[in-house]
Image (cartoon, rainbow, N blue to C red):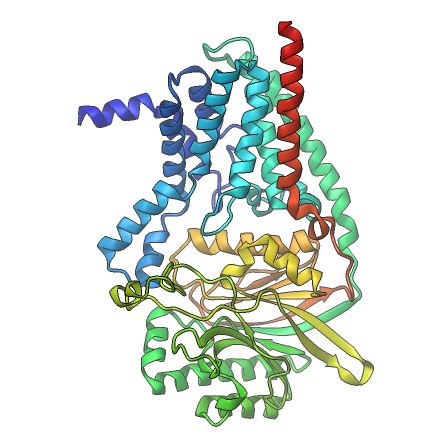
Length: 537
């Protein structure tokens, strides 16, 4: 017990940083945006005696913030991965231990390089900020994560700059602000600081941040203008996990699901006959909707519904490629665009970015025995990458809408949406099932991390879910009212968009910001090395 208390006492500043970061991320307000890492950096610069101590303090920070912000991993491992609770807890602990190792790696590198090259305090702080960003950007995590998303969540206008530098770039600005504040607070003393000492640097950071918000507000105004509108009916039937499991095991239950979606859609269309497109969520129909399965009962029910209403449907469902011999990898998580005759307008999109332990078992292709050891873990086939679905709003007038297809997890990867925008997407549709993650943290985190892709690409993004949160966001960043969580809900949405929208700077080259920062870091090292050599001579 004494050892544990001693460990906590020794690394309390690392724990403090973890607490501030964890409680400054969605769904919390980002109250610690400008100083969350400063307690940790203070320990690394002025209290750590060895690289090992610097690493441990930062590891404690990342463990703490991950436990606070991503505790839902345990629920996901249980509900989505099928693990029993004891193993799900172990999965959470392992995730907390490894998910954000770039934070201790950055601290370790900064400590070692400062000691080895005898860098000044200012040079060390600049290097730390650059290393922290680079390790965050290049870390091969399950999904990319950074504090830049909190700016969108809290509606601070600086988020409008994401179409230039992305949310990773906004995260870099946060690192820069914290590094500047850290430098001015401790450049003269390592013994702490007084409130009077902190007022001036903190005020300077706030003034610069306010100026960036004004710049963001002005910069974003041009994206308010649109020239077209897509009228959709979003249907959230509130089909949860248990029902979905029954749906996969009992054919009759699948019939009830299909009827529920059809009934809710018909009710919504009766009130809103001007709808262009009905949108259902990820795997809304848990069976195959490929043309060669059109003889199946629910496929027929859906076709009859579309013929009866003369509407088109965009829906998630399973897809099967009978040309693939592997019985597991021939099944895909698909997205279908069906016309008023029930015909798939374009080949169904197959999900490309699969979720580990939920949709595929890592290393199982090379080591098949893993599949036998963990038979409850699915192994879906992997899709072709970013794809466009072409929807004819009015074929007689040559009016076609290019829809960027996105399924769930894929909305977290900026490069995926860059691919959609580069291929001509005018509207992005993301279908999701968030019922595997619990509430309230993950649904809001996932929501805003997905909607953020709209700002980077300046394409409106429609998000349709099974149990919430369903909504859409304009290219300007206005978020429509959110659907309720765990309730049936159907809503007409008028989604404004631009025909043939221009390509944003972020889509062209901004998503490679890490290369620019890497060059800046190497240039910084070179210039300082020459200066230091000259100074010593």
